[in-house]
Image (cartoon, rainbow, N blue to C red; front, side, top):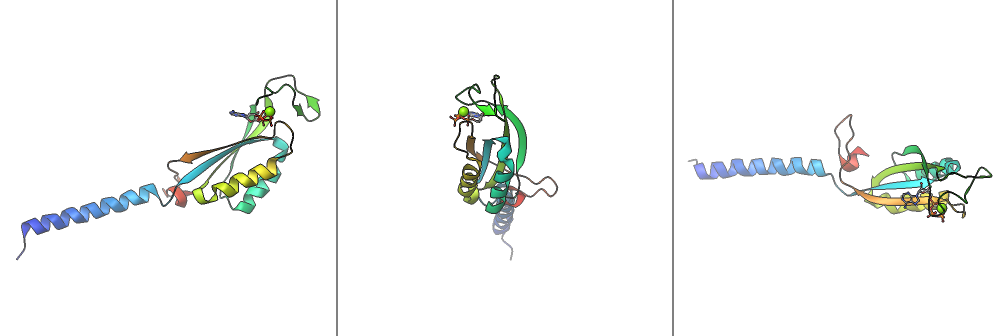
Length: 143
Ligand SMILES: Nc1ncnc2c1ncn2[C@@H]1O[C@H](COP(=O)(O)OP(=O)(O)OP(=O)(O)O)[C@@H](O)[C@H]1O
Ligand SMILES: [Mg+2]
């Protein structure tokens, strides 16, 4: 004999289970980090090779201009002292699983360093969600 209360409870639990499954496909399996690096343009190839070794799956590169604490004044670019505030730089953006973040930062720091002023900066931040547009895959699966 069917028990209306038990049936309703079963339907509710079923619904709840599906909602949980949907939810976990939205949030993915682990935390992601974004690593932004401002580097000297001539270092780009070397840094790219180092990042390849680490196994990052994608890189965004943007031509940038900027200055650090010398305000661009005393820094040399291609042998000439720049009189303007902004010096040419390259900005890299890389999103990786948390587990790769340290290796990624170390690879950039080692390959971009000349030891002179203006070598650049690395900024690390948390990423909430990543989505591959073609498939709708999310987070780790979207990288
Ligand atoms: N606080 C910052 N916020 C955002 N971008 C920055 C910051 N500091 C530096 N940058 C970017 O990084 C580039 C390189 O900075 P730079 O390496 O000259 O920093 P620095 O603090 O002056 O260190 P150094 O004394 O080694 O030159 C700048 O041209 C700018 O694009
Ligand atoms: Mg500087």
